[in-house]
Length: 52
Image (tube, rainbow, N blue to C red; front, side, top):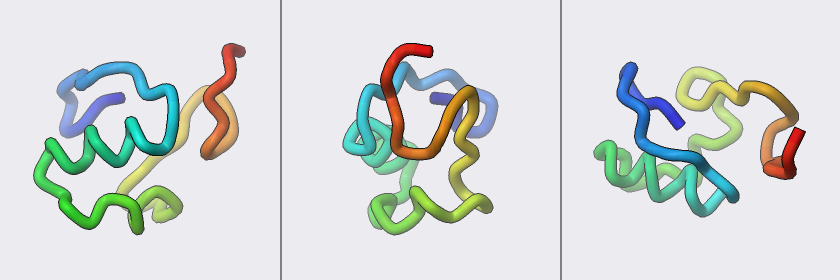
């Protein structure tokens, strides 16, 4: 996962994404997962984390 051009780590679940966003200063991150202005899903479908 990348925030503002900085690689934060690899997310394996929505919980990981929420935690990365929280650490980046967004305490209400759970509500942002489906907002394309905040989260861009790449390499697959939103909320799916299995290997490609």
